[in-house]
Length: 133
Image 1 (tube, rainbow, N blue to C red):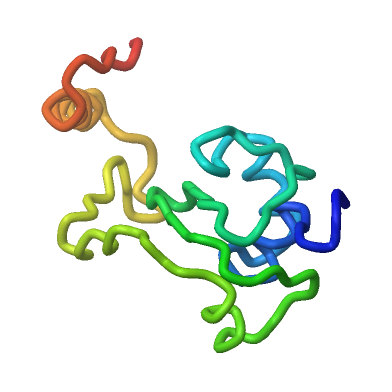
Image 2: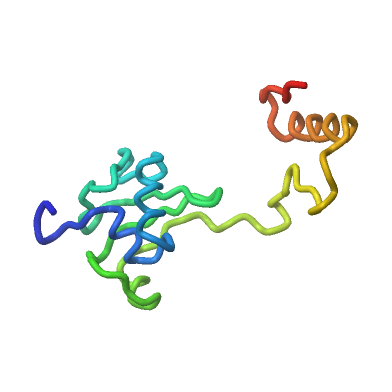
């Protein structure tokens, strides 16, 4: 660790309960889903009080400002005191569209089903390439 006023970003993200496990926090850092002050962060990057941490997780971006440094996982009430959450509100559940979900046991999609899915994806994501046959 750099000095007494800093801690590893993967440890801090896990400690304040932004992610469930430390290995998830480390994997998020390695995948480039964590940014500190708009710079990509490696798992061992030091985070200090006042830093802005951005975390992309489960299709949502969390934007938090570090208010307190913790090195051990803390309870939810204490975790809220350790950060200021500036994240945009999550989209309403009606806006989340499950694409390509099939009932369990329904088998493979038919050619007609696949073409309908491709049309839907093209409508939702213009510019995306259609799936190959």
